[in-house]
Image (tube, rainbow, N blue to C red):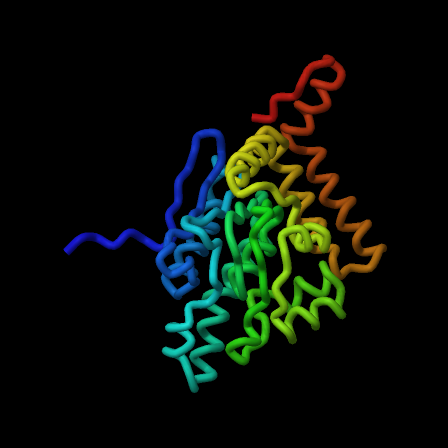
Length: 263
């Protein structure tokens, strides 16, 4: 029998870009247990491999992701504990890994994304979306609440009232709206998504990796912090940045009137 390719494929480039591809287009890249496990493993690899400077999350086919696999929902129907364990070990684990990864993650969203698929894209640090793509918190259609950290992320980004509306109605929204609300960085024609993301990833690879990771840590940790605590955390992380070789290179390059070489 022919070998079935994995539902998530990973490729590393010497430039420092790790590309993670949802490769289940015949199922609209629905997120089953295998895919979630492979995604989490890829992010753990990115965390542990010092050569990786940027992660790109992309998808094959016309859709970015249709969200949770309905067959998995059927499999766990009526078993609340099994569902709880599945979420904690699957989607929740993946979101925490993305959130804590001290490296940028860029989503290349070439097509429609619904439910957990949409929120997964928006949980990435930056998202470039096709201008004709549509999104929906489609959990309502199967009698569920948003997961994948949606009830944490959406109120912070789009505001509480709009987050409730999107969750309660599953109303579709456009790429332009996703950008206007702060869920995505920019919308470009579909044929430009890959190129735009690669240029952005290359630019981030050329930057100071330690400072990039420390800045991400500070921003995420300070989302719920008081100003006093946020300033203190910022000062401590800045002190750590001052000790990095990249800061020394940037400082020397400034005085020598040249472009810094952070590699």
